Image (tube, rainbow, N blue to C red; front, side):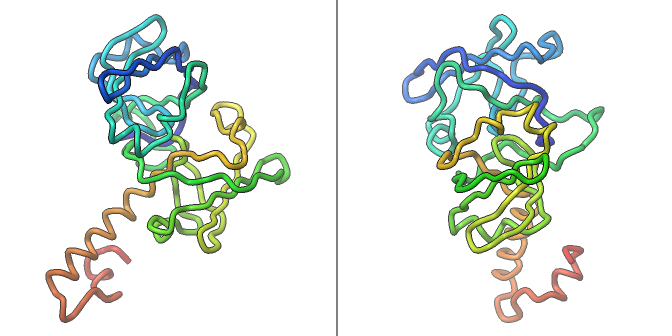
Length: 217
């Protein structure tokens, strides 16, 4: 699990085909590598990857065909700057929101505009994911925990404050670019709960009272 609070920026050193999979060699001097072990999980642009070996001031991780096809990892190249976060520990404050590192889909940046000292970004979401995005709810974009300002059809917007611009790769995002989206894990489990409840009690269905009785509302 992660928090969506980026620890540092990393640089793609090389991408090595491994059959149909891909090995990423990433340098990230901002991480204390003496504290990292083989098999640890690290989020790269919001994608949970496993450390398989170490390089100077960095690590190597393998991405499966499924991960490559479902994320923006396929768009990376040598020199790409990526957001890096190590997995959450019990000693670490949960300052963002719970993030699994399992990308649900891609969203396209359709507009960016200044908003005082911040920058407001507008994204288009695939129809099948739109119902997970709620105003004032949380989303994770390329590994960054953000709060949704407004939702209008398939478009939602977020504000990026100067600090977030400084410590992430968001400042380099351009209109037309796709980024990884992970929906709020609570929304995912709530939907599953409703599906199972509906199947188990098809006649009654799921009502607001059902949600209240089970602590979801």
